[in-house]
Length: 136
Image (tube, rainbow, N blue to C red; front, side, top):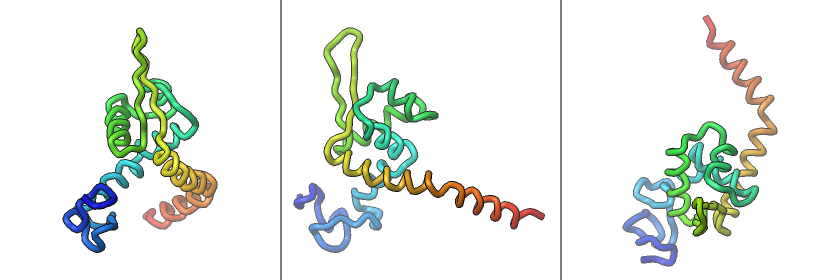
């Protein structure tokens, strides 16, 4: 194992101490996919606001199915970005929150989210021009 938890050049080409997301064998690619996929990025962004229970998180991430949210949370927890805490109460209560690493990742994602939201008038205009150019 190298200092990053990987096996160096066996997982990623190049320097044995660095990961290379552009290599299909590199485990960093899977984490990037978890973080930047639709549900992963929205889940991280929602949890940046604070800890949430599963159903509150599902309501916040509008459109995600229970199954997809569960899979997303498992992947993010496995990657060390989300912490799951089950409370021993009746009925059972499970809270999800970001780890320190998860907060760092979510901050970066929120910068991108805010950039996209702030430039949507330009995006919509570009879409309209594109669609108009492809008509008949």
